[in-house]
Image (cartoon, rainbow, N blue to C red; front, side, top):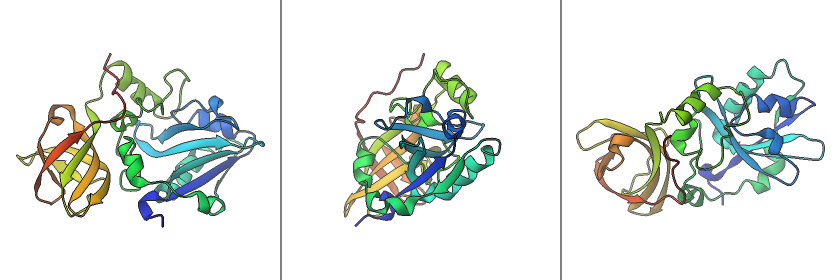
Length: 242
């Protein structure tokens, strides 16, 4: 049985301007999407903060299908619709057509170093905070799109001061995306991006931490107790600052 954290939504864009419209809205290069290829990307606010993440494919009629987390489907459609008024594209939630495909292991995704943007974290992170530059979600060559100036500045000026880390902590309570993280002195140092219970007493999280606090050994999540943490490796390298 697929739980809430695993469920996916599917948003279809149809019409002659769909690809052109998305090219000016998302972080990835939509010209690379074909019937045989899949590409990952993000749709951001003008301030470069992510509204939702997606996996894009297209069909023979060049309809674009965006797979995303179910909790942000309505947010995603509302945001895209706001920008689509001058384009010939129709934006539709077609999740019911793909209900049998809505299976993805949340823990496996977490351990691959990928965190969803969910309703609680929409408009919270710039892409590099979730290491999306390491995961191929961003094209730095495609040209302008909404939020591009902020994202490019962070890339070329080395202005990413928070990054996502894989942590393990002893806990019987599952943290929630968006929960604040404090250090042993009570100072705010980051935010939970994703979490999964691995057994009755252990939790794994993807946590966005300030660089200067990335080596911490104890954290407090939300109003919970102070917990010792183990830093686990990510399966990719974080791009070095210029």
